[in-house]
Image (cartoon, rainbow, N blue to C red; front, side, top):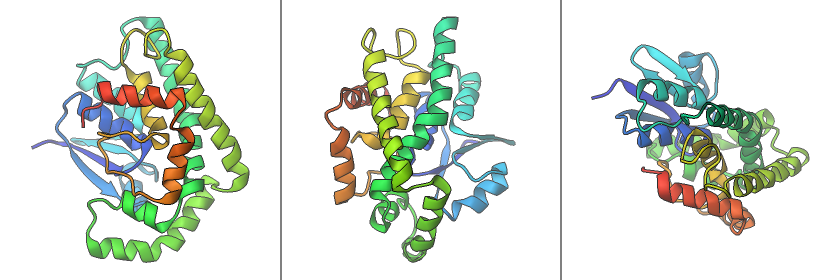
Length: 245
């Protein structure tokens, strides 16, 4: 039994950060997967906001993927995610802040612009939900889809710069990892976990701790766009070495 419970989207790169840290540290926990749209009432009750993930640890609720990583690092320090060297630690946290604020939203927007349709969203985010609930969600999706587009500004005007920022992010990890294979210090840490997880929507990786993505023509075209980029190869390598589902 465990007091830890992760409220999440089954398929989300920010949620993947939290899942990865929990799995890497071997922390027993329960996962409650929510559906985009209907999730808002649950998250409002837990955190006062509508974003996922949230970790309930006993009587404490930790909201946001990076706050969860820092909480886990303090409570379960091994294996360490923060570099021991102060300069490397500050660089790692600087990368995480920048990617949380800029890259994560851009990757999500760019991908959803390409793949946001009922078959993809229901098939990917609905893993583990009951048949009746998924049937109702599919019927509700036109409303949910419009809400997602409005809240995340998913349109052609915003998709173009989001795609460019996604490409720049892949360029960054390919370049900055050349010396050691990692982004801050000589080994795997919070910066590598964050960057690989937030780029996961661009790369067909396995053992992500979440469900397999629903295979659609648009989804396959999106993945093909980035398949040969050196940054995608870095993501695949980091997952192969350090992701234990």
